[in-house]
Length: 511
Image 1 (tube, rainbow, N blue to C red):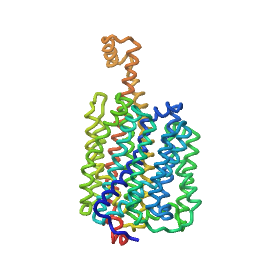
Image 2: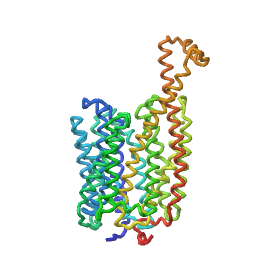
Image 3: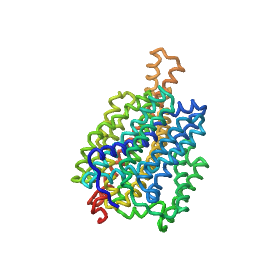
Image 4: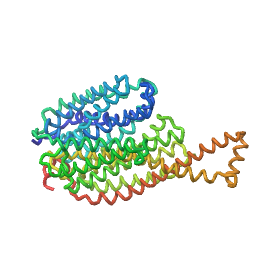
């Protein structure tokens, strides 16, 4: 059943409620990262064990997101969103109350699982509330929260863990979640989607849980266990590959699939999903790498590293509504081309980082990249969902968001591993030149000696500088590679075919 668009204050309130629920959930994926040493110490666990606080949420969330489309047909989108948000509030409170690492990990698994439907449904519900001509604006407002939340996460996590009990990183979800659930239910309960009683695809569900769970575990644990030199990683890779390949084969022949893979028959869905996933993989890899580099090599605190990354969210706040308002008269492919061009420019800019750079040198590429971010999510989501019927939006949104989230995990693993490998290579190359027969080395040690350093102090300081230089060269190479990849991605988006009619429009099923 097609419901008329909302207007006036009801539209404002529902936009705010759905956006805040997304902000809260995306924030929760990054806020715990900074607070991890504090949480581990408080609960009497090693930091390496504490990483399961992050991993457990990611694994459960990655499994739950693609189930959204099927669950929405069983329960109804409004009811499922409200239940998910309320359960997210409950599990957030339980996480904050945990008094052991094992208990916290259990509650994080539950939190990740119930959070799965929140992002895809917030997207589809928000779009159903706007008239066809303004669906671009709806997507722009939605995308703004997805962009800004990962930036605020580390800052908020650092401030809370430095000044209050770490439990408050979870407790802050309670009032926000309750408000979002109350407003959403009050406004949308009369707009419930059609409920279809479908049989459970038990084998598909089992393959999804095992395949995605093993893949997410492999990505989270790979760097720590030296990837395929570890038996555990090899086993996880084999289990994941076999399960996911069989899942694809099974789902394509299943009458009521748990994941609707037939959506990939739509050209724009495939192009949009691949572009947004690969773009987000590179973007999120940099979101992780930049603060890590600033803290480990440049002496930044967690809060200052967060502040250095934060300017990326400034321009999207102003540009996203303008782009969204004029989306119906713009070619989405040109907007994405601008986005990827700006991303490439900023990554090439970052590839000139050096040990002498000041705070402004880090901030300016972040600020300018905001233009690319503003032209990224909304146009690509519009391309992805164009030409789909209203009853396909929840499934398409959940599948697209699942692949985007998974790509973010892959991006994190690839980026940090690549950085480690390049740093080790450059460290070894630089060390080879530090000999008594090298003129530059002799001049360097004489300079250090003139400052009053002992021989051991000179060696320690030299080793520190070699590590910093090796790390910076490695970071620069990663950024350069990402810049080249963004240039290559520009070609991909031009395979999309207009018209990019907003989903849910009267003619959306005709293309």
